[in-house]
Image 1 (tube, rainbow, N blue to C red):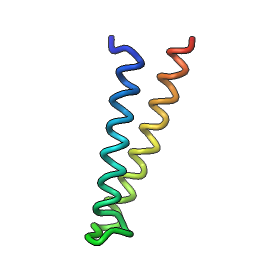
Image 2 (image 1 turned 60 degrees about the vertical axis):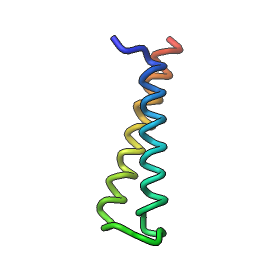
Image 3 (image 1 turned 120 degrees about the vertical axis):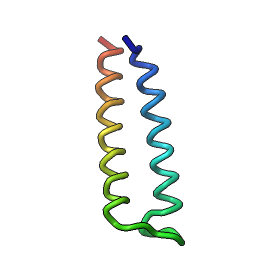
Image 4 (image 1 turned 30 degrees about the horizontal axis):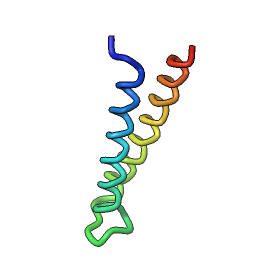
Amino acid sequence: MIAPYAIIEWAEAQKRQKFTWLDDHGPRSKRPRPETEAENKLRDIAMLDAVIAICKARAAA
Protein backbone atom coordinates (compact mmCIF):
# COMPACT_ATOMS: atom_id res chain seq x y z
CA MET A 1 0.00 0.00 0.00
CA ILE A 2 1.24 3.48 -0.83
CA ALA A 3 1.34 5.92 2.07
CA PRO A 4 -0.96 8.95 1.82
CA TYR A 5 1.98 11.38 2.07
CA ALA A 6 3.60 9.74 -0.97
CA ILE A 7 0.41 10.11 -2.97
CA ILE A 8 0.14 13.76 -1.91
CA GLU A 9 3.72 14.42 -3.02
CA TRP A 10 3.03 12.73 -6.36
CA ALA A 11 -0.23 14.66 -6.86
CA GLU A 12 1.44 17.98 -6.04
CA ALA A 13 4.19 17.25 -8.58
CA GLN A 14 1.56 16.40 -11.20
CA LYS A 15 -0.23 19.68 -10.48
CA ARG A 16 3.03 21.63 -10.92
CA GLN A 17 3.56 19.95 -14.29
CA LYS A 18 0.04 20.84 -15.40
CA PHE A 19 0.40 24.47 -14.28
CA THR A 20 3.71 24.69 -16.15
CA TRP A 21 2.03 23.32 -19.27
CA LEU A 22 -0.75 25.88 -18.92
CA ASP A 23 1.82 28.67 -18.55
CA ASP A 24 3.65 27.46 -21.65
CA HIS A 25 0.71 26.43 -23.84
CA GLY A 26 -2.51 27.67 -22.24
CA PRO A 27 -4.87 30.25 -23.77
CA ARG A 28 -2.82 33.22 -22.51
CA SER A 29 0.56 31.89 -23.63
CA LYS A 30 2.60 32.85 -26.68
CA ARG A 31 2.12 29.35 -28.10
CA PRO A 32 -1.47 28.39 -27.24
CA ARG A 33 -2.73 24.89 -27.91
CA PRO A 34 -6.34 23.89 -28.62
CA GLU A 35 -8.76 24.98 -25.91
CA THR A 36 -9.76 21.39 -25.17
CA GLU A 37 -6.22 20.56 -24.07
CA ALA A 38 -6.23 23.40 -21.54
CA GLU A 39 -9.67 22.31 -20.30
CA ASN A 40 -8.32 18.78 -19.79
CA LYS A 41 -5.38 20.10 -17.76
CA LEU A 42 -7.72 22.15 -15.57
CA ARG A 43 -9.94 19.09 -15.04
CA ASP A 44 -6.87 17.05 -14.12
CA ILE A 45 -5.83 19.71 -11.58
CA ALA A 46 -9.30 19.60 -10.00
CA MET A 47 -9.13 15.81 -9.79
CA LEU A 48 -5.65 15.95 -8.25
CA ASP A 49 -6.97 18.43 -5.67
CA ALA A 50 -9.65 15.88 -4.79
CA VAL A 51 -7.05 13.11 -4.44
CA ILE A 52 -4.98 15.34 -2.15
CA ALA A 53 -8.03 16.12 0.00
CA ILE A 54 -8.91 12.42 0.32
CA CYS A 55 -5.33 11.50 1.26
CA LYS A 56 -5.12 14.28 3.85
CA ALA A 57 -8.40 13.11 5.40
CA ARG A 58 -7.15 9.51 5.55
CA ALA A 59 -3.83 10.60 7.03
CA ALA A 60 -5.63 12.60 9.72
CA ALA A 61 -7.91 9.67 10.65
